[in-house]
Amino acid sequence: MAHAFSRAALDPQLAALIPDAVNQFLLKFHHAGFDIWLVGGAVRSLLTDQPITNPDFTTSATPEQIQALFPDSFYDNNFGTVGIPIGNEVYEVTTYRTELSYTDRRHPDQVTWGQSLEDDLPRRDFTVNAMVIGLPAKAAQLPAGQLFFIDPFAGKKDLDQKLVKAVGEPADRFREDSLRLLRAVRLATQLGFTIEDHTLQAIKQLSPDIATVSHERIHAELIKILSSPHPAAGITLLDQTGLLAHILPEMMAAKDVPQGGHHIYDVWTHSLESLRLCPSSDPLVRFATLIHDIGKPPTLRHQGPRGGTFYGHEVVGARLAGAIADRLRFSKKDK
Image 1 (cartoon, rainbow, N blue to C red):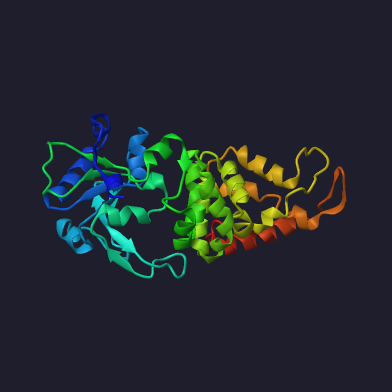
Image 2 (image 1 turned 90 degrees about the vertical axis):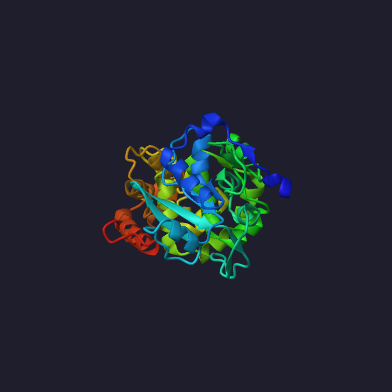
């Protein structure tokens, strides 16, 4: 696959959009003799004419070498990621990695520093996160100001087609880290993308594995989905993939529960439409809106073609909401 990692000169118009602070940061590594590449969301932003904020980088430098270059940096993890304060932001730089087995389907059993992008990029989750822009080590003879673009898994094509697609075999990527099941939905929701079919089928197949992920991590991804421009679409996609049944099983009981009176939808559709039309951008308000009728299914009585009664559903709903907030690790204030 070496040919797939060939470097292409970055379009000068795109290069001109890179903030000067980022350019100087790249050059510092390059002049010190290290590879350094923008990776992930920063590359997506640049390729879609969006501003770069809180950029992430990957490098051939080890954490110790990075800290020698930036004495005010900090490093307190086992995964090679060093935080470097630059202006009002923190740049995160991760050493090239190779990873072996994932016994717990969340963390690699062993992390070994890689020697090249060929080691690092195949372990990443989605093709749109496996593109890099930057510089090889100083030994390379480069024109002044030249940056390179490397895209071994055709992430630019998927970005243009608005697809979330796993790197390599989807089931392998999801078995390595089950949080990626949820991240695929979150990324698609945030970007307004669809999930590529082979990747989607793997999520459906492996959706029960989300139970191996901590509730804190699930909470964080759920909040990002609810903070996106189309939160109801995100919840719908969680349902279609089978993930919602494991994350928020209480909502599943709302399907096909008819409501009478002024209601024109069943409880499930009514809840999704309420979320879709929620005027607040606050994810907590949006979540409360989604589950506001969570007490109706267990209190349904006298069901008929025009619906039934739901006496006391607000009391039962409040109790269920409290249990959900506890399970998903909401703070006491948010609960």
